[in-house]
Length: 80
Image 1 (cartoon, rainbow, N blue to C red):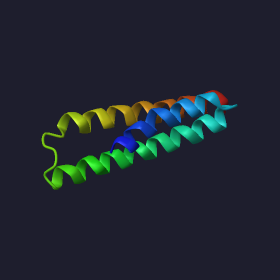
Image 2: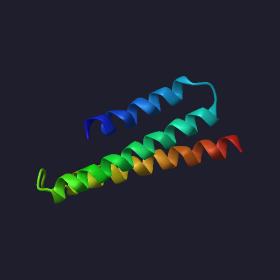
Image 3: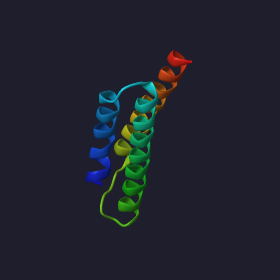
C-alpha cells in the first residue's frame, strides 16, 4: 500500500520534470493507475479485517482521482 501511495505523487513529479504535455499525460496516467491499485488494496485490507472505516480513505482516493483526471482533460484541451 505504501509503495502504491508513494507512486502517485512520484509519477506526477516525474511527468512535470519531463519535456512536453504528452509525457506529462503519460505519467499522470501511471499515477491514476497507482491510485486505482491503492484503492483495490484498501478494499482488500478492509475485507481481510486489517483496517476498518475506510470511508475517509475511499473519499480521498475518489477526490485525488478526480483531480488527476481533471488535470489530464485540461492538458488535452490546452494542447488540442
